[in-house]
Length: 311
Length: 296
Image (tube, rainbow over all chains, first blue to last red; front, side, top):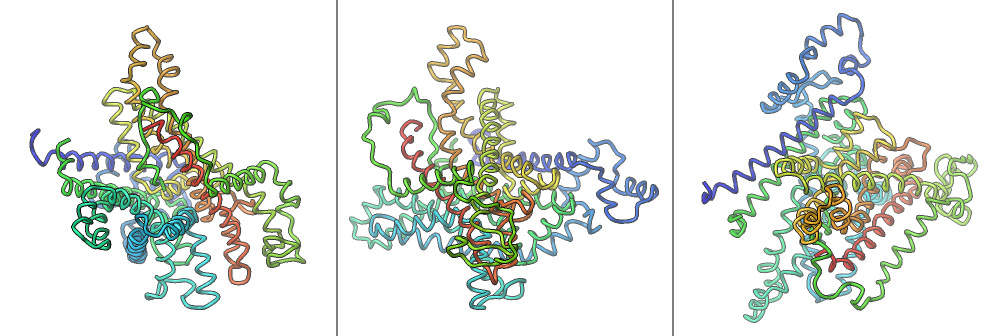
């Protein structure tokens, strides 16, 4: 097996699965650590008699040993059953499914915009051609990375929506309502990605192959776009997992600022109501997607860079 | 936000391995103007946190219905909010809240991270693997969601914020320290200490620990900025110190309802967060560049 080309692939997928299991277990431990009785949480504000309590214990299987409940939880997780919401008394998968679309639209728009901005800025400012532009853009990037996304959102809202009435103030109806939230979420991402990309471009521009290309008379724009950018984008791919985390965490805040429906609002409502199954599901799902994204990035590396296949 | 530029350049290695010229012998350039400005801002911030009355003698909670929603001007530098409270006074007094949460969270992360990283680096292969995978599992959760999970269990408040952010950021430090430990434990001076019969606790405390924590202070400065940013976000969502506490994120959230008539209530505390985080990042990167030769 040592020489098999599949070995590094299997190793990465395997370690991804282990991390996933550990994350699900950690989330389950949080459920156990929650103070107060699960029955109390399910009863909530509703009618409360010993009979109802006994029914709840029987229905949710709360009288079984903790280990059995844990294994049951893992088993259901594998089959895609995320449990039932204490608060809404509906399957969590259904609740999340309904709210996924607006958040997904927001995240995709923000990711696309962020990457586009970052690539444009990094290409425009890499190398030593325009030092003043470079300094200005690093300053702007630093400020963007340091600014809380809700501040960006609030400034955009107060200027473009309240002052000039260009965009709707809240809601998720149509393209216009997506613009400001997506820009808000995209700017910090663009700030960090641009820094990483420019660093990569600078390193690539010092490589001998760039000298060779220039000596052949290749135009500077082509050198940057065709030769240097490819090298510079490799380290940026490592950030894919991070990017995903920022998008999801940021979506919670941005949805709150712009009064947009979505996964973030569901999560916040669940946190406030101590609706553990929903919080657990969102957290576990996000960890799962993170692991998947990172494993995919690792495998892409293997595909692109033969040097890594040996270790 | 656990990934920054610093991840790329975090070097490992022991001071004993450094070949050639030490940093003291290198020609020292005067710090860039940005670094000076950042340092001055942070010094002012430290004053605001320790002795806020020097900068703002008023009471951050004192409401004055006669001056509700006054724009920034000579009498109220940052204007007043919907209750007529002076925003400048509240921002200055809020520094202690935001800095305390940030510093405490970073302290939790650094302490736990260094201990766990050391443990992983010294442990046998199986235990090391288990610890390393749990660092991975911890960083698989987006920081904000992990913190929200923690707050669902423990309830909102300052302590919850501190622990939640501390736990979410500890893998960062743990990984760096583990990597350093793996290098240091094979180094000549550790082998020599073993040969001379040094006890295991003494070996770890005297010989290994001092040589693995080198990069940690610089990482912590940059990490502090990230912790403050995260804390502001969670407070904004109502998960931190509760009103009328003048915490920056919470102030911003309160002022949001008056955005249309009084932008200064929310924008100015937000700018305080931005400047703090930016100043910490500038300073952290400056030190990182200066010490780079020592740990790479």
